[in-house]
Length: 315
Image (cartoon, rainbow, N blue to C red):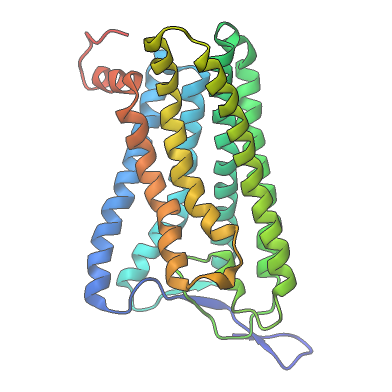
């Protein structure tokens, strides 16, 4: 801890991340489980990126957005998992104040980026199904790059505001964060001042950042559903719906737990609930996304077979 100049208060210079358990045996088991999950997430998303980059048949707006999603997912899970894995085995579970600030910022930035990027992917499906003949004209490469860049800018600027509010608070002790990473509400609960107003502002911002993308996604899929119902062929109708199924699945995996945490007052659930739900939308979503897209996508399967040597695979 260090003294605040001119005041009889000390401020913490580091935080202790309590994680999931204090039992060494339990932590050893969790280390193996989470290490396998982390490696699977990184390799799965890395494989998606590799296949899309190597196969020219996948150089379309839809797969460009899928590649960006995989990059965001890799960064999202890497922001928290390595630190958690180290803490599961290390005697000291500390993280510096600056390290906590940076982890919170990058985690929030990538999380908000993913929120907004799901809207971009929904718009891609909307154009592909409602305006199939003009798909590549509307979603030209210039627009694709602007949409992806806009999502990143929105994420990193919004997270800066959220992180600044939290980390500018005075922290005089205790410094034990009941979480496996520096999550905003969990850190903010340690501040040595009344944070009610800041929590209300943060709740309003969180609701806006969750409700707005969800509303746009729902609006897109209402138009998509109406367009699909107009298709006379049952086979064509099923094919059109199947192109949206993967996106709807990953959106559900991400938004349901995220909404449960960030659209409710922090005091309405226990720290253990927060950790478990955070684990799902942070870790398991990044693991499931490549599985969902690869299992339901024939183009990805063909690209994989082509890369491993089945050159006779036809598109």
